[in-house]
Image (cartoon, rainbow, N blue to C red; front, top):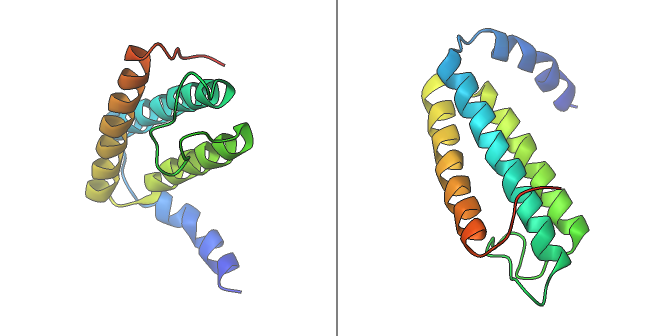
Length: 116
Protein backbone atom coordinates (compact mmCIF):
# COMPACT_ATOMS: atom_id res chain seq x y z
CA UNK A 1 0.00 0.00 0.00
CA UNK A 2 2.92 2.33 0.55
CA UNK A 3 4.24 1.66 -2.95
CA UNK A 4 1.74 3.91 -4.73
CA UNK A 5 2.47 7.02 -2.63
CA UNK A 6 6.20 6.37 -3.06
CA UNK A 7 5.88 6.05 -6.84
CA UNK A 8 3.76 9.18 -7.02
CA UNK A 9 6.39 11.07 -5.03
CA UNK A 10 9.38 10.00 -7.13
CA UNK A 11 8.82 12.46 -9.98
CA UNK A 12 8.79 15.38 -7.56
CA UNK A 13 11.96 14.06 -5.92
CA UNK A 14 13.68 13.81 -9.30
CA UNK A 15 12.47 17.21 -10.44
CA UNK A 16 13.67 18.91 -7.25
CA UNK A 17 17.31 18.13 -8.01
CA UNK A 18 19.52 20.14 -10.33
CA UNK A 19 21.47 18.02 -12.78
CA UNK A 20 24.31 19.11 -14.99
CA UNK A 21 25.99 17.75 -18.10
CA UNK A 22 28.32 15.83 -15.76
CA UNK A 23 25.37 13.96 -14.28
CA UNK A 24 23.94 13.10 -17.68
CA UNK A 25 27.36 12.11 -19.00
CA UNK A 26 28.02 9.79 -16.08
CA UNK A 27 24.56 8.24 -16.41
CA UNK A 28 24.89 7.69 -20.16
CA UNK A 29 28.47 6.42 -19.95
CA UNK A 30 27.75 3.93 -17.19
CA UNK A 31 24.62 2.73 -18.99
CA UNK A 32 26.54 2.24 -22.24
CA UNK A 33 29.12 0.15 -20.41
CA UNK A 34 26.41 -1.96 -18.76
CA UNK A 35 24.94 -2.64 -22.21
CA UNK A 36 28.38 -3.52 -23.60
CA UNK A 37 28.91 -5.92 -20.69
CA UNK A 38 25.45 -7.37 -21.30
CA UNK A 39 26.35 -8.23 -24.88
CA UNK A 40 29.58 -9.85 -23.73
CA UNK A 41 27.75 -11.84 -21.04
CA UNK A 42 25.38 -13.18 -23.71
CA UNK A 43 28.37 -14.28 -25.79
CA UNK A 44 29.77 -16.07 -22.74
CA UNK A 45 26.39 -17.73 -22.13
CA UNK A 46 26.33 -18.92 -25.77
CA UNK A 47 29.88 -20.33 -25.50
CA UNK A 48 30.17 -22.05 -22.10
CA UNK A 49 32.93 -24.38 -23.27
CA UNK A 50 35.05 -21.43 -24.40
CA UNK A 51 34.54 -18.83 -21.64
CA UNK A 52 33.33 -18.52 -18.06
CA UNK A 53 31.53 -15.51 -16.62
CA UNK A 54 33.44 -13.62 -13.91
CA UNK A 55 30.40 -11.82 -12.46
CA UNK A 56 29.50 -13.69 -9.25
CA UNK A 57 25.85 -12.63 -9.59
CA UNK A 58 25.62 -14.42 -12.93
CA UNK A 59 27.62 -17.54 -12.10
CA UNK A 60 30.30 -19.13 -14.28
CA UNK A 61 27.91 -20.50 -16.92
CA UNK A 62 24.67 -18.50 -16.84
CA UNK A 63 21.73 -19.12 -19.12
CA UNK A 64 20.70 -16.45 -21.58
CA UNK A 65 17.55 -15.84 -19.53
CA UNK A 66 19.53 -15.33 -16.33
CA UNK A 67 21.87 -12.89 -18.10
CA UNK A 68 18.93 -10.92 -19.50
CA UNK A 69 17.18 -10.80 -16.12
CA UNK A 70 20.24 -9.64 -14.19
CA UNK A 71 21.36 -7.11 -16.78
CA UNK A 72 17.85 -5.64 -16.90
CA UNK A 73 18.02 -5.25 -13.12
CA UNK A 74 21.43 -3.56 -13.43
CA UNK A 75 19.96 -1.07 -15.90
CA UNK A 76 17.00 -0.43 -13.61
CA UNK A 77 19.27 0.18 -10.62
CA UNK A 78 21.45 2.45 -12.70
CA UNK A 79 18.41 4.43 -13.81
CA UNK A 80 17.09 4.63 -10.25
CA UNK A 81 20.41 6.11 -9.14
CA UNK A 82 19.43 9.24 -11.07
CA UNK A 83 17.00 9.96 -8.22
CA UNK A 84 19.77 10.07 -5.62
CA UNK A 85 21.12 13.36 -4.28
CA UNK A 86 24.11 14.81 -6.12
CA UNK A 87 27.04 13.31 -4.20
CA UNK A 88 25.75 9.72 -3.81
CA UNK A 89 24.50 9.79 -7.42
CA UNK A 90 27.92 10.76 -8.74
CA UNK A 91 29.69 8.24 -6.52
CA UNK A 92 27.33 5.54 -7.82
CA UNK A 93 27.88 6.43 -11.48
CA UNK A 94 31.66 6.72 -11.16
CA UNK A 95 31.82 3.35 -9.35
CA UNK A 96 29.62 1.66 -11.97
CA UNK A 97 31.67 3.20 -14.77
CA UNK A 98 34.96 2.00 -13.29
CA UNK A 99 33.73 -1.53 -12.53
CA UNK A 100 32.08 -1.93 -15.93
CA UNK A 101 35.05 -0.45 -17.82
CA UNK A 102 37.41 -2.91 -16.14
CA UNK A 103 35.05 -5.84 -16.81
CA UNK A 104 34.42 -4.91 -20.46
CA UNK A 105 38.14 -4.30 -21.10
CA UNK A 106 39.04 -7.62 -19.49
CA UNK A 107 36.46 -9.44 -21.62
CA UNK A 108 37.75 -7.71 -24.76
CA UNK A 109 41.29 -8.84 -23.91
CA UNK A 110 39.96 -12.42 -23.75
CA UNK A 111 38.50 -12.07 -27.24
CA UNK A 112 34.87 -11.50 -26.23
CA UNK A 113 33.53 -8.87 -28.59
CA UNK A 114 30.81 -6.30 -28.00
CA UNK A 115 27.62 -6.51 -30.02
CA UNK A 116 24.23 -8.16 -30.09
